[in-house]
Amino acid sequence: QNGHGVEKDQQQEVHHRELAAIGGHPTARYDLGCKEWDNNDNAERAMKHWIIAAALGDDRPIEFMMEMSEEGYVSKDDLAAALRAHQAAVDAAKSVQREAAEEYKRAAELRDEILFK
Image 1 (cartoon, rainbow, N blue to C red):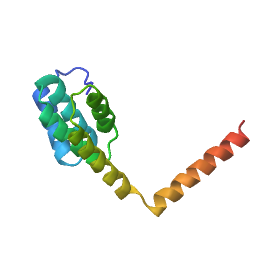
Image 2: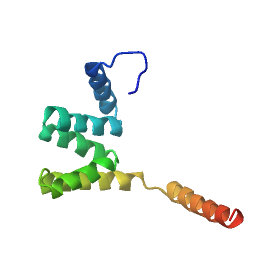
Image 3: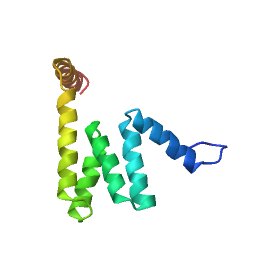
Image 4: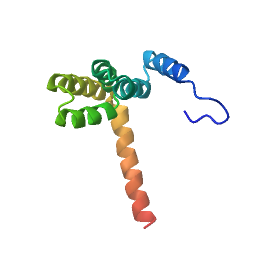
């Protein structure tokens, strides 16, 4: 991303982001969508990347698509598909262990707030 002492190779960057996206990396998928939107002016392909990133649980495509929907750039159908995919990912990530860990974290933060006030 911010290599020092080397030239930036856009083709290599895109290639490695594509490999990461294929491997299931949500940030790479989101970034590819942004690149399609900004550089290639390919809204349809950008939407596909963002819907997949949302399906992997990334919040950023949802936020961006909501903004773009308000401006008329994103259809309600594309936004709805992304929201459904994102919610399914969030629901799939829920577990008793995660909820217990969150409760433990909240209790520790409260304890620290009281002790170190």
